[in-house]
Image (cartoon, rainbow, N blue to C red; front, top):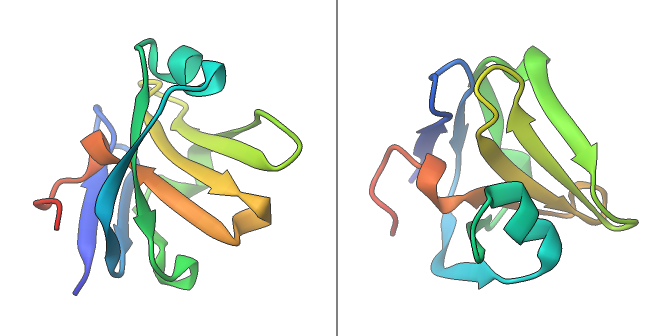
Length: 103
């Protein structure tokens, strides 16, 4: 099964394979500032190799927020798209960017 997602302006569109059955709500200060909220909600991609950009991938913003994690966002609308952990060993999409129903 695959899932599609996009940012607010639809410039960034992605597709990914199987997702975790759990939604994680991170309350760290990086997630709070990145989302402008009390927490960020993420869904882990089971196999990071299944993630691919449908459109906008060349214009994605990437911010190295710590020594082991980076955040990807849309350069046009600022939507937080994904967290990348340990150089891509783990990817977690922002739950709100999913266009398909969360598993």
